[in-house]
Image (tube, rainbow, N blue to C red; front, side, top):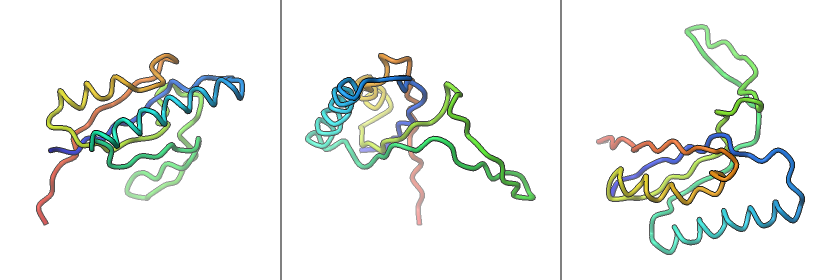
Length: 113
């Protein structure tokens, strides 16, 4: 079994009613429960908007990322899958596809320590 990271981008609906938000969060919770039962879910968290970018040799700090960007990272999962094909298949249940979201599927590199 290999580890993969799902990086969730965009797809956040602009204005949801509280009822719609509750229904939508129910889809997320059902997906997590399904992955848990299958032994695929390792961890995951949503991310708050905003933050800081630290970069360069001077380690300069700037505001960002900006929430208006459609490639904003909204959260992540780490999952177990046998290979990239299975990980991609699992990612297709991402609830925010209906809002134009995307999932970046990346294999976690094994490091020998």
